[in-house]
Length: 355
Image (cartoon, rainbow, N blue to C red; front, side, top):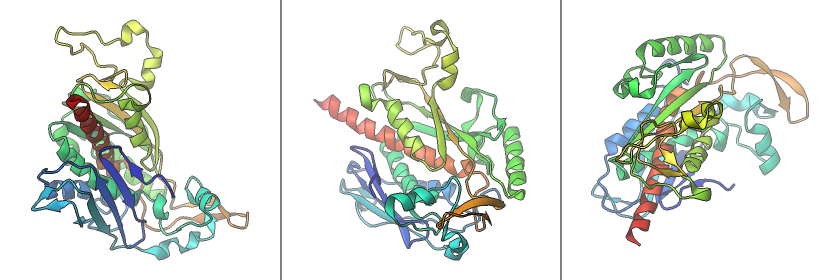
């Protein structure tokens, strides 16, 4: 299986399955001499972990990170950073009923067709549990680019959405509720909606908005390595993501150039920021902001038709521990992938500046 690595200079390779002994990763290219805040890493893991509230999967995992290499006396050594996250609460029997079936909108069928085998326990490698390793790497990447601030939050659940620009939101309130929405009134509506969907044995999708501030001018490369292209790749690599737009995104298709152009101020900043902080694939110093759309979780705790490995269509009801809505737990994942992209381009830019 290819495609288990992400990044160029700051590179993460992940391994492990949802119901295996452990997940883990190797971070290559992290500069030496960075003092690591282990509490900050564990805090991001707590934000992603299952079982943290009544509106997420009730699988109980502490997700405590064990570092194996690349650190000495609390600082990075410049060598590969190896780590594992033990799995401690697998309930593989919950998946025995799907051993010989292919669930709709899962990776089950294509995995068997591509590899001739699949780990049906929680989806194996296709499980969103793989993202725990990304959060570890992203938490370290944040410390490499400590002056750059990354804040992601839930801006929509189903039809319920924040109707304010991000500039009018208080990011300090993101962690004040289990939905991770900084608008407290909208957060209450989202939480109630997710609970109702859960009672029905159904699932619902949502949108996460991410804002990256204090980005220096010059991150990103022309043509194929544009900054927004890499951010898009990073976001679309996250389980259940079906859409990405930066700046005004699809709304810009409805606008005239005279409406969309970001006019300059004398200091090089712009009066508006409809471009989302990126021009020609290169950061321009303004806030980078984008939205990521997540589909509803495919596993339903109600009956639906499935395909068997004998080519039969039967009715099957899902069981086990699953998220009715993935977006609250995906917030730190979006931040992590953003940090990996920015750290990678930040280090690449330093190389250019020294030439």
